[in-house]
Image 1 (tube, rainbow, N blue to C red):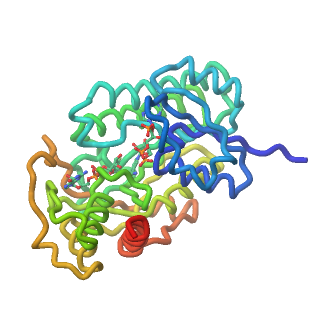
Image 2: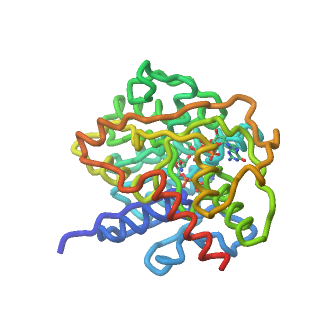
Length: 325
Ligand code: NAP
Ligand code: G4F
């Protein structure tokens, strides 16, 4: 009998970690994942409710290399997906050192563990479109070749992660790949990211549970896709015949105002009566526009998204309505 592939996912209880775990189980993987110690254990694994009995959860922290080497020796993974991070851009301005520790030293701790203990492991690195900052090619897109000038502590840390992956790949001939993923959302998105914040508050207003939605910059645009589509890209990237870096995006961009308008209109409401701008949601430096060209992953790996901006939001609105009703 053929041995099952073993995947270790850092940040398995996050949005992407939970969808990726489901996807890999459907592909007959044995799935292991890291949990960070938290004083409140209730709800920590709520995104894993569907598969809780089928995954192996282990305490570890990306900032603690000993916990990672212990896991690598114990689990003997064939693939590692490094999804763990302090992933909120605005919070990275409030906690720049912690954010940097989780991303920069987290990635290095994993790389050193692989280099020292098992050089056959393949590693996927969760790189981000936030690394581009406000750099845009002449045709309005960002792609693999676009220069990267990040505008947040989170983006700067992710750029280090991206570069050190490439450096270790070339220096030590390891199978290390970056997915440069544009924003992706789902009903499991944290409520302090703008899509699920808008959806959640709009649904509450609809049900008379709230009467105001406070937001920051409505003009910023993002290339929003569905997390379910993006975890499939992660798996394709790591199962390619060579390690490489890929942009993953829908190629369609919308403003935060478009997001608000679509969500409120879907619920038969006029957003103008409820939206209030609160400066506390503005960032010290804003990344204004993101729109990704994912020609490379589409042509080389056959990836394409199934969800559009609208069907992604429909899924999120439906899930929230179901929850409150
Ligand atoms: P998420 O929901 O915030 O999940 C992040 C995960 O990382 C959580 O499980 C979190 O655990 C864990 N984590 C945080 N600090 C850690 C540490 N010190 N050690 C170990 N684990 C730690 O983020 P996501 O949306 O799933 O994103 C997954 C990855 O992709 C992140 O690296 C993110 O930066 C990157 N990314 C996301 C997007 C996007 O649009 N979603 C786009 C590009 C790149 P707790 O919940 O217990 O804190
Ligand atoms: O939903 P956001 O917080 O996502 P952001 O900053 O684009 O970061 C996400 O995508 C990155 C990929 O590009 C990931 F790497 C990162 O981990 C994360 O998943 O904000 C989106 C936009 C921003 O322009 C922000 O200024 O929405 C604007 N916005 C307006 N009002 C708001 C709000 N964002 C949040 N979170 N909350 C607001 O009230």
